[in-house]
Structures are given as structure tokens and as C-alpha cells.
Image (cartoon, rainbow, N blue to C red; front, side):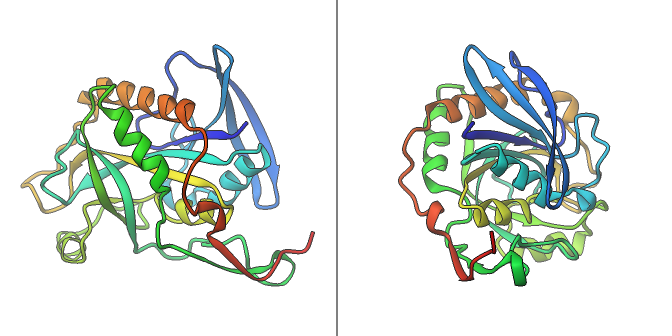
Length: 258
């Protein structure tokens, strides 16, 4: 099983797929992963907050999740995120392909390689999100009648609180386009495992301070979510050989002990 989908707020199923729930024991704890099957195609499906949305952003066990996918043989991950929009070119209900991030999280484990037996490594972040997967996503978006904003900078915050107006103004000045609570360290950990990782954000509101009231459009998003799920599956089905440097992102100073 080489492909996986990780979803966030609002997406808790893959239309048309049968799910088999599995608990996978990892060195970092248990991870709940679903094996999704349809017409001979199989992939791993992981709901970041749990299928009942009971895990808040700051309590997600990102290391267990990514390690479990690696243990299943996953090499390609396509993730989705619910976000708030900072960039006026990405309105609520808009989609955006992530290309870079700004990390404002704290107290989250950011690496598998803590030194000692776990090894020590430095990981390249010159292209955090797989560019080859990104090109395929943009190519297939037209087939699914979806418009996706390219080259999007994701601002990662700790949550579970929302950001202040002053924080949003700062993020905008730094080049942030959308803001969310779960994008980091997930992308970093995937890259540490030499996975091809791409992410699509879908906006459910304007970020704090950009409108008089924060209005969520989640109840209007069902059709877009279904199309997005279709695009994600289609992309993973179409991916064959990926011409990128994702598999060479990690430079070990001391490899992990077996």
C-alpha cells in the first residue's frame, strides 16, 4: 500500500470506499488508520482529528500517525486542511495548493530523530510539499471542475484558539496566505520519512479581523468537499513515477540504530 489520504475538519469519509479500521502500534503510540478499498484500489485513510472529531489540534499524535503510514508501506501522502483565508484571492469555499509554510507552533515534537538510538538528521525544506504531486493535482483539478490557487503559504498556529487580528496582520506581512492549526509538524515528519507529501487547503472562513464577524461556510461546503475527495483519490490513482527530490531530503549525521 503506497498511497494515503490524511483529512482534517469536515472530511471524515471517502465517498464510495469501504473502510476497515485498524489500530497500529508504533514506537510513538497507537494510531487509528483506515484501509480504504474500491474496485481493486487500496489506500490508507487517516482522519487527523479522529472519525468523530474528538482530538484537538494540539493533542494530535503526529509522529504516531506518520510512523503508522510508513509501517504500512506508504510512500505518497495527499493531505487536506480546513483553513482561514488571509489572502483575498482565496475566499471562503476556495481551494489552495500549499507550497510553503510559516511555523508558529510550539511544544510539538518536530522530528523522529532525537539523537542517541533514534539518530540525528537535518532535513531539507527547500520544497516542503512534493512539486511533482502538486503539478498532477493542478492538472487534474480541471477534470473535476475545481479551481485551485497555486503557490500558497500556510501559516501553522498551535490552536485550539483562533488567532488575534494583530497576529493575522503580522502573518499577512510575512507572506502568509492561509492559516490553520494542523499543518506542522505533519509535513515535516512526512519529509523526514522521505515521503512524497502534498496538501490542499479549503477555506471555511476569513481569518480573524478581516471581516466584522467570523462567518463559517462549513454548511455550504459539502459539494466542494465531495469534489475535493474525488480529486484527491484521482490524483493518487494517477501517480506513477515522481520526478522530485523528496526521497533525498534527509541528511543523517548519525543514522538510527536498527
